[in-house]
Image 1 (cartoon, helix red, strand yellow):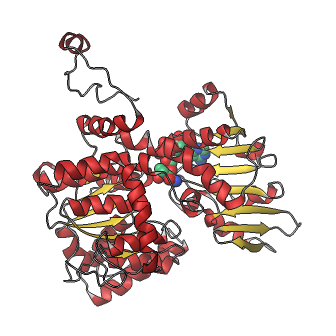
Image 2 (cartoon, rainbow, N blue to C red):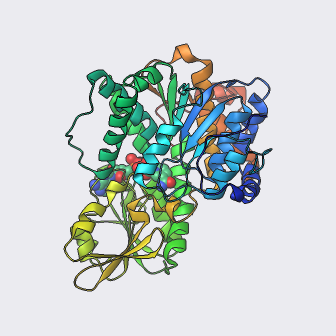
Image 3 (tube, rainbow, N blue to C red):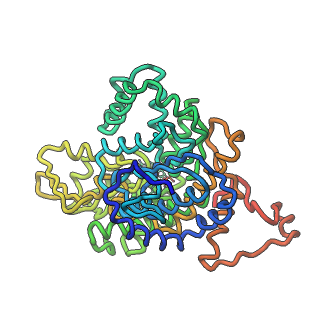
Length: 480
Ligand code: NAI
């Protein structure tokens, strides 16, 4: 057995609770369990060093242990300062066969409520194995691990970290400081590291956007697989996942009655659609803001009013951002909201809500109701309630998406890792989506659990609609 010596989590004694939840989750993650059965014997990831930056939850622990079951040597961090479930992190370190005194799982650097400095420290630890070597591949969610490596390589080539930059956020300053220290300690750290990385598999919309941008600018240093745009990821996790976890976050944070309230959902993409269903399911009156005429028309045809934020800002009770864009709810908006209006974001980054602007307002007072729930009191005496400091509150105030839907997402992640490691020469420094037959395979693996019985095509029918009996059943341009 190999012990784990380098890790940092909140409390290893939470491991047995974490293990019980992992065992419950395994039952709900048929896709991952099927992949263990299919690929366990051939060990396609044998000895491969896989570094993962993705919310350290119970479901992620099942993903980690699937990668290990396929032979990988895994290290892990969370991709958000509030999303770690400390018992899951402890169980991942201890492993199924270890004890808190003799951990046998994987090195995890993650706890709930990291500072931004700690967050980037963890990401640095993620990328260095005890023997000093770097990862062979990356599992990323939002692209922070990939970003650190790319910036590192560029600054090492330049011999310096730029002193000024267009991004004046606190977080960017911390990233630059991290790289400045690294450059002094080892001027070729990330350059060497990047050479041996065969690719990254990216989980979410925002991370994928970053990858395509790097590829467009010819700066991408290794192949990327866009897991988000597998149909069995974005049309399930982003939509049905948020439908479950959005009200979970709202309830655990505030326990406010949702029925009858006016909820404003900014963005009607996959996550927005799930958010709306979640709130409507509770009887909220929901209105939507959009910039895209297609999504706006979809919202209208779904029976929703499409409005501008300015026009509902004084009337809304609950405001949810789902855009993956920045500057959606500004401090000036929040100042006009009604007393105790709730503001929360489920888009990937915290810049959808202008938290910095809010904090800068003259005479504003921030009162902690409990961790990740804050009352912001304006000088005129009215308050608003902000969840998870403007970061993904379905993970910050609750436990994120449930196991079953994450099984589909993480089956795509696992398949994408196998693709990278077994078909290395087929991937260039571009961004790829998984082929449709693998998407269909992931869906197929989840049908039995929901009691679905698939109709089989006859050869004649297959010929008539121009597909193979075994699929793929749709052309690439089909939109589901
Ligand atoms: P999407 O691209 O399908 O939807 C975003 C929508 O926001 C688009 O329709 C876009 O037109 C709209 N939008 C952009 N700027 C806007 C503005 N200024 N005002 C109003 N609408 C605007 O993306 P998707 O897949 O729905 O993801 C959204 C975000 O959620 C991303 O940041 C993604 O990474 C994140 N995400 C979060 C999850 C969670 O568990 N909290 C799960 C999955 C994704």
